[in-house]
Image 1 (cartoon, rainbow, N blue to C red):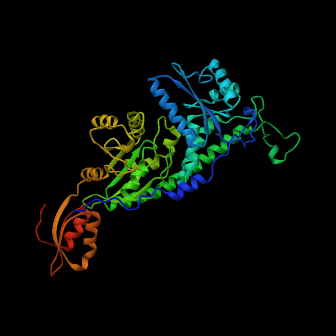
Image 2: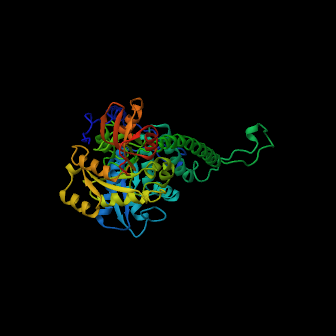
Length: 470
């Protein structure tokens, strides 16, 4: 039996973290036009912001927690939050999100604080964005645009960047606008061909041309992502062919998924106290306390009201969860609403085919910073759970034992005499199976182990039965 020991080096992706912190936005250097309605291509600018939310259901604490999460998202994007406002309504106003009177009050707050951006805690329609901007006279963005901006900052791999760009274009397409409502900016149908006087007629407007170009770019990105997902499927197939069990880490953003991966495997991936710090999935090898090999994958984090554009764009990445044998659902025990985190993640996972049938272990993380009563409450509600601290190592050994019990069992227990010239099979038994005993005799090695079907067949072909246990 192998005793589980944590990796000596508990790294946090120091180089990645250093790179990310090397460049930060500097407030007050923008030369963007003040009249935002006349800017066709407006780069997302987050400097000094005021947050506004509409409380339609739930308790006041729920509404405040949602706005607090929006504050963390805004700070992750590099902004300075000056104020936050919540309005109680049955439903968001269809014209200005918060109503015309409240929009005027919001304009006063923006002027008094010197804010240059308003961030709304919801997804606004193109009409709501335009009318609210006309009232408050500063840039208005919604929660979806904010999350997309964070993803764009944090994506590193080619696949991650393509997925984020596709999601951004899907969001942008219905929200394009021209230079003022009275300007069509039409290009003559034959003017571009140099026909000249008498040959010009109505052609595509600039906005129609932009929409067509966006659709073409989206089609190209979908083809690229499809090609890149093929290589991911190939690697996944190789792991399945070798019959190595797979574990996927899923959970709310900033719940400590990457820290847990580092603690279990010493992967050294980026760890930062920020939302959506890591987007690209990382797959590493690990061993159970009994020495059994398995793979463990860190996936993209979830959040309440995760934009549907992102769910669609990251579908190939999320399939890492669906292809796993076991899910480690990580939840932040120190969060004000851990049950809400669990529900939000399960809501997204329910849209991924095949996840419903998977076994799940709820990993209640950050035990060192959590209220013991909260940990006890979650543990009672989630029967199949374990309390850990990825930072201190508390509960990790118990988690590894639980993973050992939950992984698919090895099918065959054998006791064979394996010739010395087939030491490669003995090595595979150590890597892929569970070796119970090894005894070296004159004719070879007597191997007593539990192994998977493919290795069992190879061992039976070359080995001599000593005693068939099962």
